[in-house]
Image (cartoon, rainbow, N blue to C red; front, side):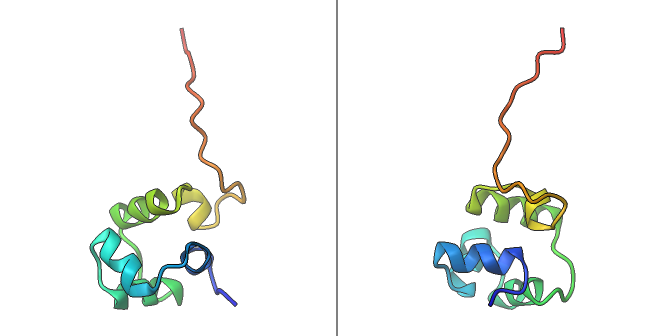
Length: 77
């Protein structure tokens, strides 16, 4: 069973740690550490993960349960 949302999304999309690491330009060791909540993920890497998974960084780190991206453009005139 996945331990966190990064691992859950990776498994859902069928990536190995190595494949996901290659997609965002980090080591498989880093992916494994993030999945075990060891160390921290740089913002740039979190953004890359969210892009690969089609979700938001907020979802990946547990600030929201809404997996969808919100593309609403607000008109503030």
